[in-house]
Length: 186
Image 1 (tube, rainbow, N blue to C red):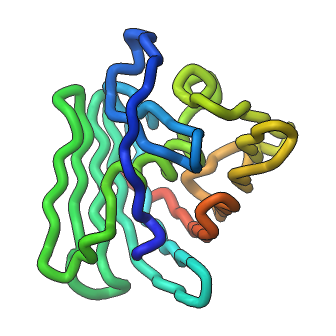
Image 2 (image 1 turned 180 degrees about the vertical axis):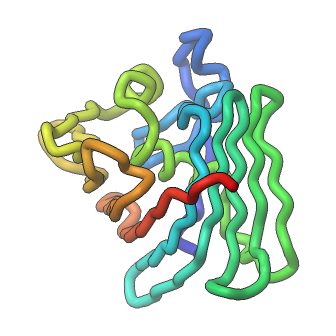
């Protein structure tokens, strides 16, 4: 979980849509999280995430619920206890950490990584500073600076919440492999 560490930084972006907190994606590259969650309504998904940083690998589960104006993610150890709950609304980002949550686990870093994978392209373009977002015809995305790929995202063009995705942050040296499955509402 230590690879989800991030630090917030200052930004000069003044777009009124982008009044949320800033998360560094890489040195000199920041993502201003929108004031409201950018994931859309009526998404309920379960994810299995394998996070790799250097020679460490961590696996955790996530239950995601997105509705109009609200995004909730609950992280657990696979088939085990809760690690953390994050609620993102227009009122801000609230987190509830359990005793087993690593101190280095960052809600903003996690939300920024999810935004890079799942947020609409136009929102990312408005809110990324210090890099260019390059979108592929296959649904993949890259953050590039001076011709160098800093972050790569593999994801399907259609139904990304119901498929495999991968985020590779070359600057900070971590990879997230995400297997996501849409859940049917009862």
